[in-house]
Amino acid sequence: MIINLISDTLTKPSDNMLKAMLEAEVGDDVFKEDPTVNKLEEIIAKMFHMESSLFFPSGTMANQTAIKLHTNPGDQLICDKYSHVYNYEGGGISFNSGVSCKLIDGNRGMFTNKQVLNSINPPDFYHSPKTSLVCIENTTNKGGGACWDLNELKKIRQTCNDNNLSFHLDGARIWNAMIKTKQKPKDFGLLFDSISVCLSKGLGCPSGSLLIGSKELINRAIRIRKVLGGGMRQVGYLAACGIYALENNIERLSQDHIKAKEIESTLFKLSFIKKVEKVETNIVIFEIQANVDSELFLNILNNKGVKLISMGDNKLRLVTHLDYTDQMHKSFLKILNDLNF
Image (cartoon, rainbow, N blue to C red; front, side):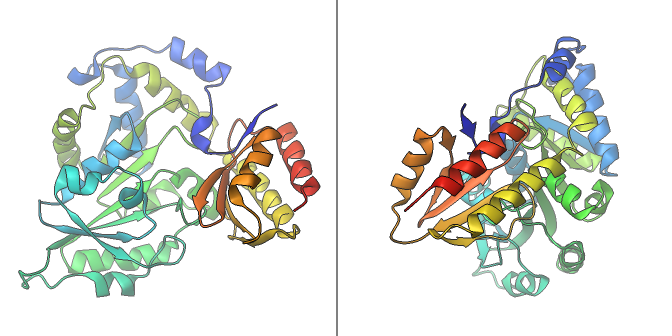
C-alpha cells in the first residue's frame, strides 16, 4: 500500500465523477458553446455572489491572468513572502505582467492591514513602482493551511478602496478555509475584485480552476487566457467533474482536517520532531531535529510506502486528501509511532 501525502493534487476521479464526465454534454468552449462549462461558470459566480467566472486549466494561469488584469508593466503588487503567486508560479508575475512584488514578512503567510498600509508606495513618488494590487492566499500553502481572519480582510479591503488598489484572492484551498471557519462564499465575493478557486485539490477533480469577478473583468480575462494558451475545446468533460465535486466533495473536507489534526497530535509526541506548525485544515508542516538527516528520514518513510515532501531546512510537509483512506491513516500513524532516531 502506497500512502502518498505529497499533495492533495494527487487524487484521482471517483467512479461517480467519471460517470458524470462520461455523461457530460459538451461543445467548443473557445466559442463559449460548451453547455457544461457555461453551467459550471454560472454556478461558481452565483455561489460567490459575483457577476461572472471563467474556466482555466490551472490555478496558476487563473492567478496570472488576474494579476495582468489588475496591473500595468512597471507596477508593483503586495503579497506575503510565502505566497504562491511569488514562490510557485514560475516567475510569472514578472514574465507575464512586468510587475514586481513588495513582499510582506507576515505570520504563516498572512499579514495585517497595518503592514499593507506600510507597503504602499506614495503614488506621486515616481522613483518607486506604482502600487496597484494586493494579493492574498487562503488557505496559506507554505503557512501550513492557515486561514485568514475575515475581519482583517475587511480592513484590507477598505485600505484598497482608500488607495485605489485592486484586491485578489488566490483561493486554491478556499473550500478548506470555508469548512474550517464556517464562512460562506459570498463573504469573500463581497470583498475581492477577483477570486481564483481550484477544483483539483481538496475537491478531487483531475484539473481545472476558475477566475471570478465582474462581467467586465471576465470579458477581458478571456483575451488574456487565449494569449496564455488557455483556450480549450470540449472541456465540459472536466467541468462536469467540477459540478460533481461542488455538489458532493465540499463538506467531506472536514474529514481531511480531522486526520491532519490526528497526525499533528502524533508528531508532537515524537522525540525527533522539533516543531509542528499549528494545524487548521489539511496541511501539516513539521520540523525534525537538527541531528536527524531529512533525506534519510524521507527515504525511510519512502521504503515503508509513505511519500512526503521536503520544504528545506529540515522542514517537511504532508497533505491529507480525498484518496487518503482511513486504513492508510491508521497505518501511517503506526509507522510514525514505530520510528526511532
